[in-house]
Length: 206
Image 1 (tube, one colour):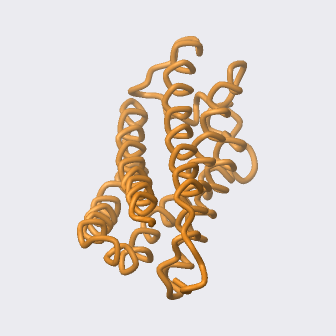
Image 2: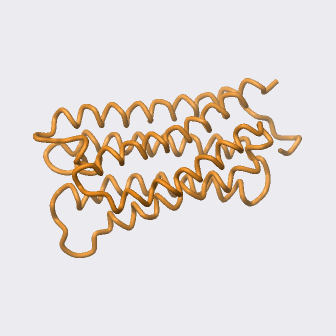
């Protein structure tokens, strides 16, 4: 970081708090939406199914909250930029991921039963899966400057995501909802690691 630039601990902590609020918002929306939507089965039905129909607004709020988490983390990472094009690219892939989350929430062709024309939702999900895979790899070298544990976790997460995420697209529809939630928890665990790292960076600021 340029010697003339100074990390602002309050700014970083606000980014972390916003990210945590976003995660909580997504969780609450998923739980409340699951209770409000008639005949909803959290094992067989995906999160996208909650984002369509009469009660779509509940899960849409959750999607927006999760996107806020991604943006907050990306802003925090930009504030403590570790140098190099990979860190920059990792920040932008996080931003792209947030946009894809919003688009997935806004284009729920699965949940509303309308499959006519091009199902953009599918391509947004593919794009999100790719962004989530490559972001930790792009950030890993910079994360090593924080602590080698962050780099190792980034590698482990990418490896697990590479193995587990493609399986979702081949699962029978009677269990894909539960599996999708497992992937969501895995992704959130990775993002929480970044939030924790940003909080530690704030604490280390003189």
